[in-house]
Length: 170
Image 1 (cartoon, rainbow, N blue to C red):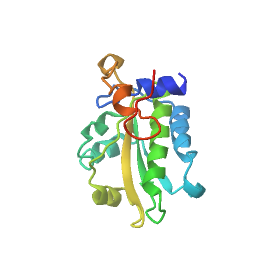
Image 2 (image 1 turned 90 degrees about the vertical axis):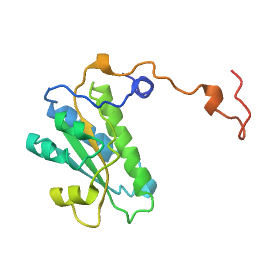
Image 3 (image 1 turned 60 degrees about the vertical axis):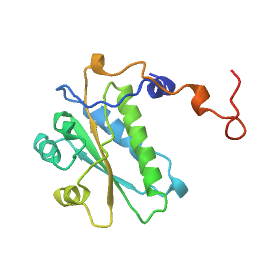
Image 4 (image 1 turned 90 degrees about the horizontal axis):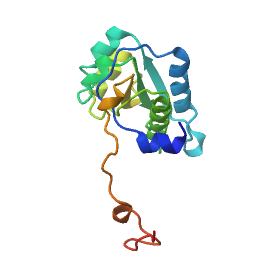
């Protein structure tokens, strides 16, 4: 799948099927995060890979808007260093790369936004100086249950030319 097809078809997945993901695919997802561009090449991130079923079950209580994490093949806890001025932006770039690479392999994901971050840090032994940006679950999913042809705002609603309000001719 080319990148544009990936972006156009990407959807958040909140229900997963059983299925082991090959280690090579997991490492490709991890490498896509590590290889992401960052401001001043600061790379203000670290990634905690969680494959252990019992740990994924336990993490369900910390991921308050992502209890579906208990169903996934693996998850990545994305940590950022708040000493870096651009840590949130750079971390988000890494997360998006990981989600897109996973999608290209037929794996779904969904940004988990509400997390008991301090409790999760304690559970995983994360140093105090790092922040949890998000937890990304990954796994196979029933492609028939994913929204396709999502209703998106029209280009006329979101595209502007040379300032706000002038529409791009089509």
